[in-house]
Length: 113
Image (cartoon, rainbow, N blue to C red; front, side, top):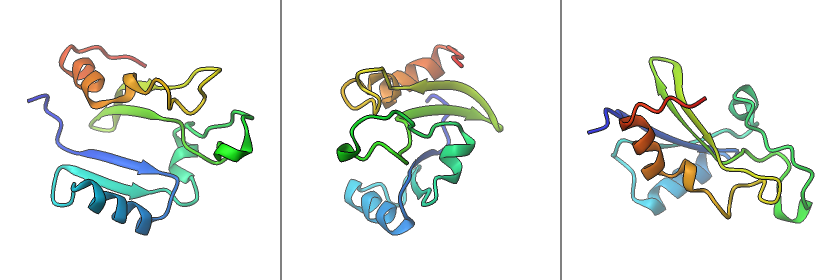
């Protein structure tokens, strides 16, 4: 209803892990595609690499920020990043990147960059 044709989910991981995650989530043969970014090339190109010096024990270095994009014909229409100084991974408050918030932004024409 929002005009979304495909949802891509990726993370800095390999394709085998992403394929297993997709199977676990039951999204095979749907509009959702899970993809790996094993070397972080896409993450770096999008300037979404997590660089916070936070504790190495939680694996912050080399990770991708928690973010969501709405892209139309190669143009970014909405960009949402869930991060704060005390929550660099966006784990505590991911709300702005969840489907409901993105659909609201898309339907409402809230082009946020």
